[in-house]
Length: 160
Image 1 (cartoon, helix red, strand yellow):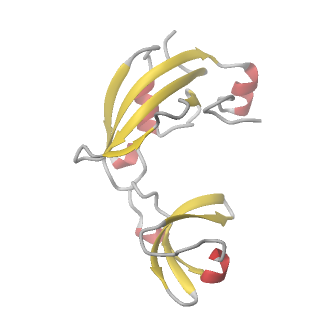
Image 2: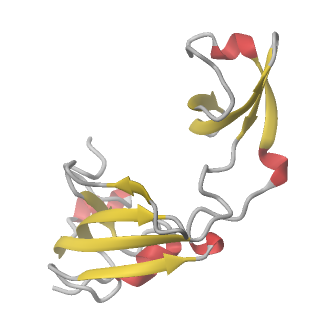
């Protein structure tokens, strides 16, 4: 079965930077699941998945606008340190999770002061060209419930 709109795709990937250094590897964890055509993964990767089948392996290099987005200077914020008291060892470069009006977001610490912490809300890979090595593990038709919810269910997807 080919990957197309309303198919659920199970895949593994390796993520590399422009120097070919490994940033992330989905193995040995469960494979990732997503519902194709519902914008559940970055646009460039979803586009590259189209028409692939189980067993296909491919590599795709994505410019920032098709991957983690352009770096935005206005996404740097100052947060009162009292809101981060649950975090230990605050130091520049550390990635932590912050509860916001839009849900929990990962941020990178830029500077730690006595009363405030400067953080960067950009994804750590925003502004970077990245390469994905992908292996398609399985492709199946989505259930009516998955289509209604707009995402894949099960291990590697959302659980309900």
